Image (cartoon, rainbow, N blue to C red):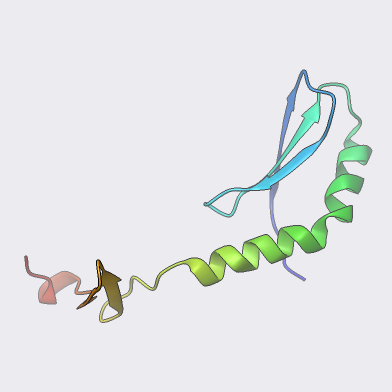
Length: 87
């Protein structure tokens, strides 16, 4: 089970929504007067979905470490940092 931080954004809306952005931030948008317990229950009910989204984002991130291969427009380059880097 993965732990994650949830940001709650309250506004003049009627429904709850849940999203995981590209920075792996979990955001719940909620009505202004909704109780925290209701929001927590909503997040708990969707925990599997959140964890699947976070795992998919982690798999999709490219390896940008020194020496890693990366494809750009069909050509494979090797990432070089520090002393080995040259333009």
